Image (cartoon, rainbow, N blue to C red):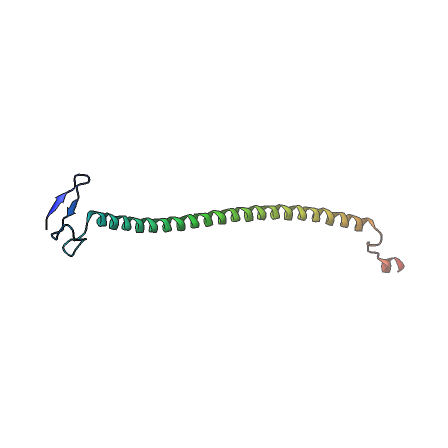
Length: 119
């Protein structure tokens, strides 16, 4: 088998031992074009795997970002509920004190010791 170096890229080109008119007969192994096609095929498969991997990473990143935004929203909501709760507790204390003051000022709610006065 003979080979000559291609000056363009330094690779070997296989020369068929069969007649030049034969179309890639059994004596021809791989031509430079089929080798390049095979390499391109491997590159495409690698690129497809990389593309699938990148799409999966992108999907996961987007999902993480969405979950972070959801967590931020929930955290803000918890803070708002805490503030509202403190406000309502304060209002309840004020109302409770007001009711106690009304009850102590009213004669209806005062205890009467009628037994002691009658004796």
